[in-house]
Length: 64
Image (tube, rainbow, N blue to C red; front, side):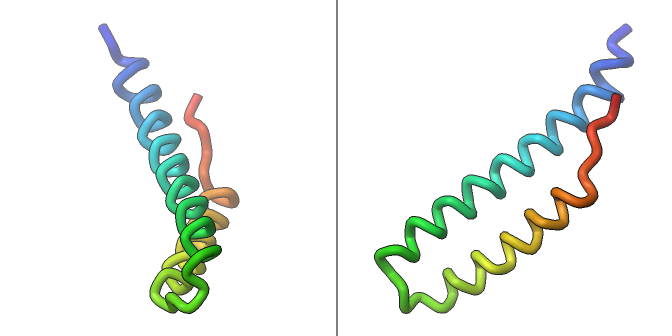
């Protein structure tokens, strides 16, 4: 009965949530590093998050 929602809608929603959470993390780290420039751990995490975001941009597909 809810085939479309379960098999098409839910994976799209989960993917969208992952991308949005990663985007929020990147924006937070950018703002954090404006005041804490010497935090190497945050810089490393930001670089990794940007690479992951770039990968999402290249490979993410919306199931229709």
